[in-house]
Image 1 (spheres, one colour):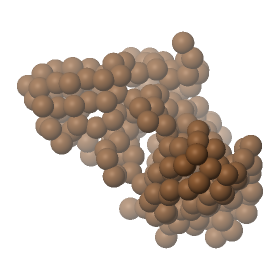
Image 2 (cartoon, rainbow over the protein chains, first blue to last red):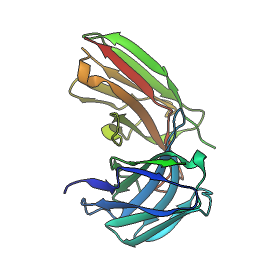
Image 3 (cartoon, rainbow over the protein chains, first blue to last red):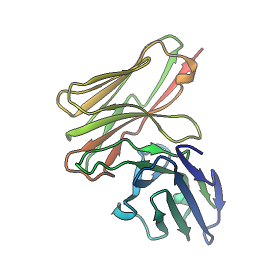
Image 4 (spheres, each protein chain N blue to C red):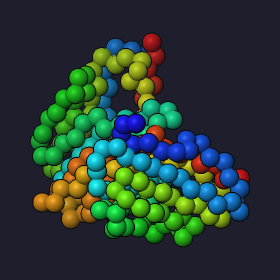
Length: 116
Length: 113
């Protein structure tokens, strides 16, 4: 596997279900991100993990719970979601520069989530 | 908060035509990125711009970082059917965290053979 992979690619769940999305990066990066992509809206940053610590949470509802067990893996645990949470969930990774500055984010293919 | 205005929202062009799209902001950015997203896939980075005035090419694609640091454009020359997709601009602002990547709403490109 190369790049950033995400599983599953498609997920349909009921509002009372608990599910998890998985992301794995094979690029040796030390920062990982979750984004939500809804129709006709810009990509929304949900969570940022840098060196396995969460550094940013853009006021995401608690029904979304991220987990970053190591620098290569990122999970998004889902519980009691609402139909409006249906969207494409994208994972990305990048390499932080210790001296400051930004390295490009590389995206996975996404998980298409439908909440019934 | 910081926002990017990307235009046009969509384009329908004939194969072989040139394409131009742009992003503007009321805020200054220190990095501009252009991504392309194919249906069912995640965005793929096309071009990254790091300095005001920088002009960078990637094959038939050319992008520029505006002198004011508040805008960027992407040009595609001699379009082909595989150019179809959604193109996103993204910017990183001054003082932002590593995760502070702001995206435009995208330009959907359709190419008629």
